Length: 105
Length: 364
Ligand SMILES: Nc1ncnc2c1ncn2[C@@H]1O[C@H](COP(=O)(O)OP(=O)(O)O)[C@@H](O)[C@H]1O
Ligand SMILES: [Mg+2]
Ligand SMILES: [Zn+2]
Image 1 (tube, chains in turn green, purple):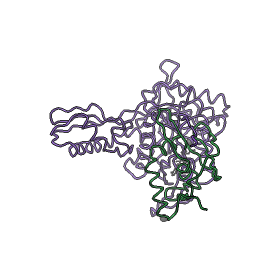
Image 2: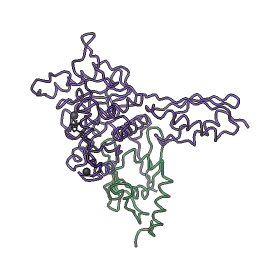
Image 3: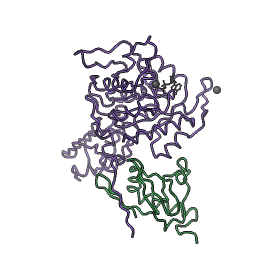
Image 4: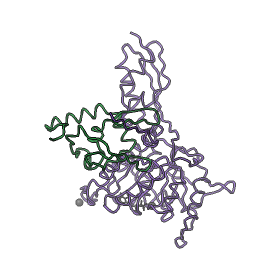
């Protein structure tokens, strides 16, 4: 879980799986609304490292090899603020696709 | 049935400002709520210029309160806008007489940066804001032409410069300082930055809500120095949809981020071509390039303008589209983009993308 505290003391706790399935990387978000690529089986994903990018974002490297997501502060804030809704939306999309959070055996 | 100020506030928590997409209470727009007997008076103070929608918002708030408060009598709402200054990159001194600076930039010349800048400035002014334009494009100052201003600025005290004015804008341009007949001047870096520094700080800007700065295109040393010196509230990047232009625009994006300037968003110019004969609209340079770039970099796609001969003719004759055809479809796009920029700037004081948050990895 990643805890992130913004300058106005708003803080959010973001599970790795949540961060991973909402990666802003083009591999995940696609090239526009409606082109998202559903991420499945990421329940146990972990983080190997965080690399600051300039003063505006952090690159999160996940232990499944995904390392192309640049999370800007604004994006992290959005993920925190809308966590409940976005997570539910993800679960709904998983269910609709008949997919699972569980890693493939 | 009776209600008090708090009930009015709670009712307004359920009403969303269509421009900011936030409710009026968390948008901090609700002021001076007074309940006397069954009557309610209050003010809605918007952080962005929006003269054209004040009436609409007033009617919306009044109708909402009439529905939400049982037994309510007279509801009177006044709506107005007030633009306040927002933070710029750290360590840069603000400009006197200017609340917010919006830098308009592009990775290369000829993409329509100046045309976009002037139309956005006019769109902000049309909504009631006090707006200035600083033409800092040493390579091709075009604001004098686009604004239909000629001559040279006056100085009352021999030191400062009075801004030139037209179409309700205050303007200053490096073009006013060089003689049009001269062979193009060869600028050396320090000379440029000094000249622009003077134009910026020695012009007597009169209480501007926004100063729109038309930056020189590119991402070289001069641009970088300017980006470090000019106190920018937010940058708007103009690009065309071609790959090469997009590549240059990405460099622009990186340059601003490097110096800590916030990106308001990207405008895609010449997104589509509208045939002047049949009105057919076509993506001649390919579709979605600007949007893709925005998605990749998580910046806002502010909007796209068509390639349309009228945009050129109107700008090049000193009457940009927003004043030449203020109610036309193209002017509407510029106005919509300007609204998005203003809303975004208004939100910047509580912006979370500027300050480095504290991040803790908790392994459980
Ligand atoms: N959307 C457009 N449709 C048609 N012509 C345009 C459009 N935008 C800009 N132009 C024209 O293209 C030329 C270059 O635009 P300009 O704003 O001067 O570019 P820049 O400042 O990026 O060098 C100008 O003649 C201008 O009138
Ligand atoms: Mg220009
Ligand atoms: Zn045609």
